[in-house]
Length: 246
Image: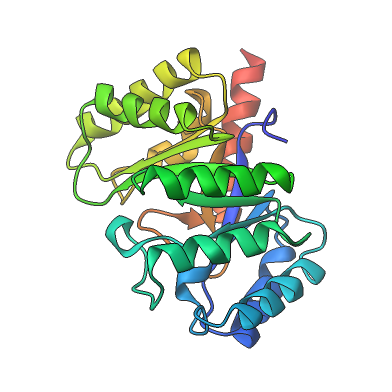
């Protein structure tokens, strides 16, 4: 799946099952390569049966598009949720035990015991694990970004992800340089992005530096700087056409 670059992923951010299915119906028509359910937006996240019911509805209405299950933590840009960390891992593991989602996302900054548990359960159930890092305050040095991606790989991730916030154009360049270095040094696919308006260029061209997935707005944005999927696809197609001609 990750051989084709870039895959375009669109988020689901509805607060309840009805909102999510309505959002999903509109997104499926736009044919993204991947759909991410941002479960931290879901009002009934503390009720596992409600989450699994909604996960099944998403699966049944996704048109065969691969699905990613994400509970983004508040400390890394997600919504506040009423779950303790062990309860969040319980929920991620429960989803791994279903056929509904192919991938789960978990932050690499969490306790190693939680990461190991989720790694074991996801592997046992044939699910891919994304270990991610998000910094909404700044862009670290490119060596730090690279280190974060390498840590994810060392923890057994199938995909390593880093998203950072730029303060100027040099920060965007640092993210792209780190992406290129990571592609050369890691043995797993990587996902990187520079967020906000300044970082939008990384969503359009990050794949040229090695990022396997870019995130776009299907109906609602889940992070600053996401572009509508229609516009993003046009830009990527144009760049690919131009590059192939030369």
